[in-house]
Length: 257
Image (tube, rainbow, N blue to C red; front, side):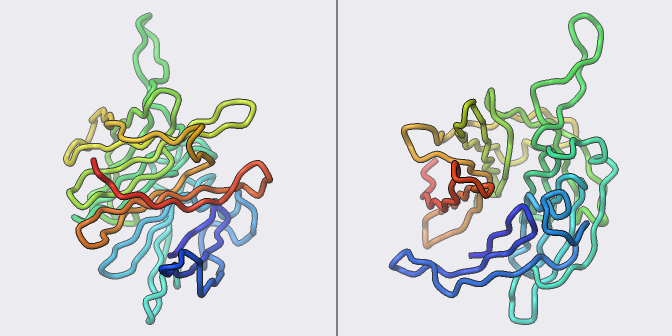
């Protein structure tokens, strides 16, 4: 397991048959937009990896930037900083609602979703307002060298996208999060059909799961997909935000949809 916090902290460990973490190690993300410990300096919110090379890309909020990292000679992820870009199309995204979700597709394209940036739409009165969707970008290749084209992702009502991953069949699985006062999180998991995302498209996913009370629920904002034999396994992780009201949980699911 390799996990990256939203403060540039790396956690690595193994999980054996006893479900206990072993070989736990910590490191600081090398390079990036800032070198401090605060979220504003190193708000690393999204992570995606090229499994063939170990190259990783990290999306930074506040900076609305994407950084690229090479693996070490031993295969350790996030070992060396290679460069960073602040795409023009992201510059107007909110400081705390930028590239929260990012995935490198197996064909080399990238999909990035903003958590809170909404597209401008025409109102019935002839003015300009904000739609219910979230702004997304589709890159033909590495965001450090390719230009992104825009599209819109419409999450379930009341939710915002917080992470995205690619399924083995080419569909995308999106983790969406909602917050309700005084202090309750819930998540909706949606699936977007393969090929639905393209320039100018308005995309809605099919909801396949919801994590809310009385089920286990928390501030889940990370999702990853792996294969175990014939099974497609989905991992979901939460962030405790260093508060006693939240927990860091790692959940494992087998996808049947």
